Image (tube, rainbow, N blue to C red; front, side):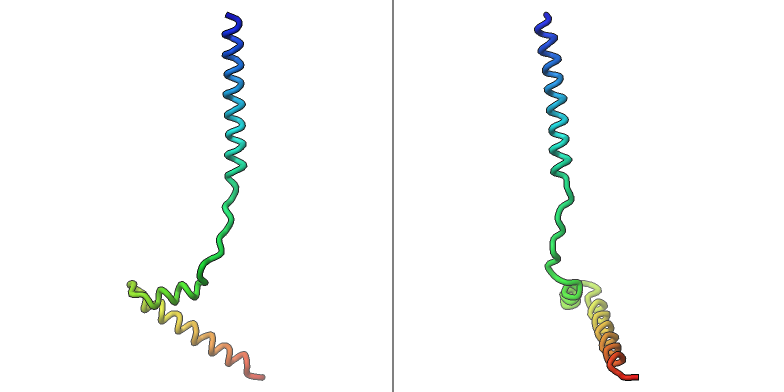
Length: 82
């Protein structure tokens, strides 16, 4: 009878040790994934949307043209000597 109790206690310890080891492995492997480099810039994505036939694509295209126009005006203003 003593042999059975010892085997049960040893098995219980082994199960607990296995659980602790598996939790440690899970925690070690759960690190943050590395950030991927974006395949396209935001400007490239917006331009692709503007050229697509999606609803609202025309608005995106107009917004890009307005932003380009504002940037061009700002470049002219920056080039003027006071």
